[in-house]
Image (cartoon, rainbow, N blue to C red; front, top):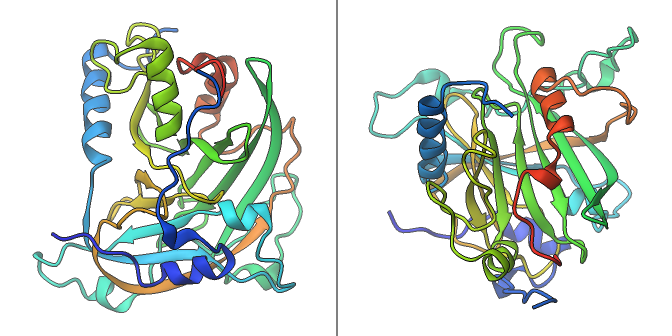
Length: 311
């Protein structure tokens, strides 16, 4: 199937001039025990590598609603997920629910208030993505991290809806460097890294290690649950990637720069979601797979990858 650009990318380029100029190939500015058997983890890593090259026959596109104040240059809007949601494959028998429904990758918000407060009824019918920013120290570098969260749509109840999200680490220049998928069903931590970051890691560390496909990945024996599924091209401006969600699971399997050709034969419709700042304090544990989140805290991103000296 021939790739073509989303007709709706123009919506993003209205607030991000220069997007159409293509990917920016930036130069680097400076020259535990597994939770599953090793064989299962090896199979899961191979599946993650393969899934990252996915293409869809038909898809819907999710993007954030315009800012009511007109401030379209807010960082959280520029980094907010653009989700390419796969529709059921065209070769299968038509599914009337798929043809008639609205896309359901994102459920109406808000999330259940863990402190016992009542949710805002006025937003209960709007698909909602929650965002949160924090600063982290990584190998002596003060970097910014954004997290975006939502619940699957299409579930019978809010309780049964699965929480999903992405964690987006920016480099020292404020460009997306690492994406981590949150809320995955397997024992892996699936990451995607910027092409410039992988190139810098390759210059410092050399070729990928055995059973790995990227130089930035650590030895399998050291980090068996971590996989860098693919790289994404560097954007000419600081924008979050496109994320590809499989049908019918809504699993996020790929992250691509907005400047690259899309992997969808046709875009059936576009859908807006509300972008709402998360009110969870820094010391409150996230409700996306709490046990895995605790593992991430003890096995921080600093020790997850083979970092270059500067990024």
